[in-house]
Length: 249
Ligand code: PEP
Image (cartoon, rainbow, N blue to C red; front, top):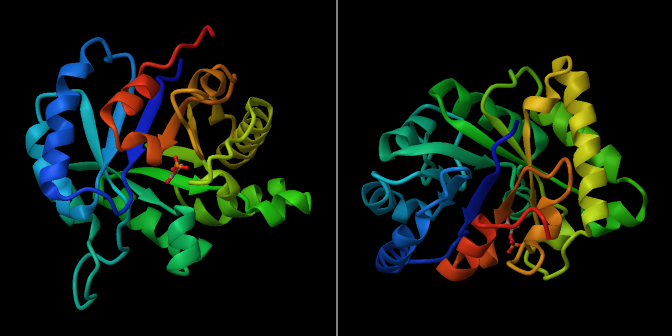
């Protein structure tokens, strides 16, 4: 039985005081949520205060990015060990915004996953096709390539796969439950091939304009085990409604 996994990706939003305000209102809402893994990925600058304020709760922390070297002359980068040190359990790797704006290739993504795992971080590994790729019938090819290259030489422990169709991220256009289920089932099939029938253990979460209005339908899909939430995670009310999704709607 896979435990639902709901993660907030704040991207480049919220100062330290805004983070504190969110957490102040968030903690009282966490009652009765122990049946869900809840993860918060604030910007680097808010990780420390988040770790401090969330230490006695069931919420764990993720970084939105990580570098693959352990230390050295890499101005502006943050190592896996630094993330562990500040209290992170996970790192988001391969997000389409990193691939798109910062030229992260499958090879770089693979190096980051290796380094982060070596340091003991769990991985939220993002994959997904662009609109052009979907319209050209290439969705499965893209997913296969990203999985095979991204996870090359990597064992299956502590990896969450986030299926995030690029055309659905921040656009208000969510995948239909059928589209999400089809992609998730395909991803599980590829993971079975890669890891010899271990795919049932993988949490495969959906990301792309998840809101309180569509979460119940998405979570009702057999192979959708959770959500990676951008815009709707910035407000406590909408994020908590997503955390408290209703399976039977
Ligand atoms: C994301 O950034 O991973 C994301 C899914 O964003 P949004 O929910 O805003 O589409």
